[in-house]
Amino acid sequence: MIGVAIVLVVLATLLIGARGVAAMRSTSDFLVASRRISPTLNAAAVSGEYLSAASFLGVAGLVVKDGVGALWYPVGFTAGYIAMLALVAAPMRRTGALTVPDFAEARLGSPGLRKLSAVVVLVIATLYLVPQFKAAGLVLTVVSGTPYWVGVVVAGVAVSITLALGGMRAATYVQAFQFGLKLLLFVVPALWLVLTVGADTRREALSPVEFTRFERTTPVEFRLDTRLTITEPTPVSLSGAPVELLGQGSYAAVAGSTWTFAEGADVPDVAGAVPPGGEDWSRPLLDPAGGHPLLATWSVLVATVLGTMGLPHIIVRFHTSADGRGARRTAAITVAMLSGFYLFPAVYGLLGAVLLPELYLAGGTDTVVVALPARVDGGWVGEVFTAMLGAGAFAAFLATSLGLLLALSGAISHDLLPGTTLRRLRSTTLGAAACVVVLALPAVNLDVGVLVTSAFAVAASTFCPLLVLGIWWPRLTARGAVVGVVVGLVSSAGSVAIDLLLGLSPGLASILLGQPALWSVPLAFLTMVVVSLRGRPPAWATAAMLRLHLDESGPGRDR
Image (cartoon, rainbow, N blue to C red; front, side, top):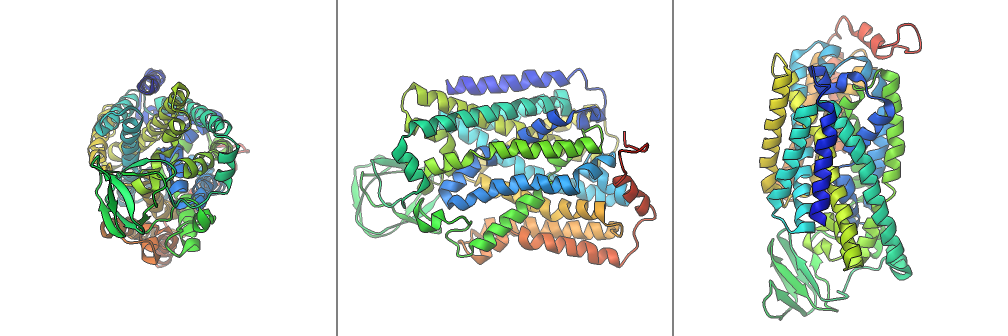
């Protein structure tokens, strides 16, 4: 049943995307759908591609793993569109650009800045695309037992074919449809879970007790190498072997192994983690184990709010509007749509902390959404809702991947290589998808949330300063923009890479390196301003600013 539901989602993606094939005649059709998308349809498409694996699965998983403070993520995701509505949406559309690098060259007259911006697009899109494909493979494995690589390849094929055939128009139709589908497939199971679990479980979810003992015989399949500390003699079966009594001490659980704990056994401690429930877990701030919750919360908010303004696959959406006013309406409607969706990840996270707390041991909290129905109902009803959530999750991966792959292909074909043609755009799309599939195959043990948050941090540190200063500050120079983007890229991406390589324990260093937006964004802004003040803005800066802020209600309204 689950496999059938996912196949139907993939087929619907291909069939709906086929509507865009007939309208594909130029690169403008491919990249911005000839700027003829209505605000409501555009907002549904934006919401569809924005609700990625991080939203559909990741937020609920982070609630189980890190506590209720993880609900700051959807706050930041939604607030980012308010900032975009106020600062970026309409002026970006008025430039007439097709991509973010297009805007950079049009505003500052620097081909070098355009190519640098294209490189940044490649970094952001890759950081965001790999976890989408990885999550597709993981979910298909969890719900249907297929090998991990099958889901990755299926996602890559479906996305690349849809985009290569129909471009932005096909992506728009598919993403708008998938937003409605995801909303339905996320909300209905959530309501069923709340009504089915019973009053006692609902009370426990609202006031969870710390997870200290296993309430039933529980197998834990470890996805990552994990260091466990056992604090009292505990009966455990290691990967099917006879039960043995493990004494107090530190033990290494190897990735792929399964430890089965007996009913009533004490829950081992995990280094750097906080068990679901309890005072630290229930505190409405992030970083429950690191000791710097306020700093960690602000770091995530800066990355998600300002990073949204710099995501290339979101920015390009506003170029598909007929004018700046349509871009503003698109952003406003998107805020309303996202707000409705983000009411429900908390339901899955809080219920998961009560019903599936052992997932935090296994490092598999990002599967809590699709695992909950089977825990609540082991019969056909639970299977139906698992199929619904599996199909919805797959729709999330496909919708987000469409926008990201479009941005990636546009950066290569339109901004890095001369002489853009429709044929090259299509072939680049297929080649880029193949490369991402290759990168996603060995990424099975990487944390989806870490990679997605890294993409937001890079976007906030590079394109956010470029767009905000380029739109609102006439003194910005090409040199200032180049140096600022380089500083933002190196400081954000470099810090995240160092954190991943070193595997730092929770603490101040881990926050500053793993969530660098709190300091890398101000650094990029300051660098752009200081370097620009030492030079001269382009001669056409005043005229460019007038165009960006043109009153569209008068005779000069942008068409």
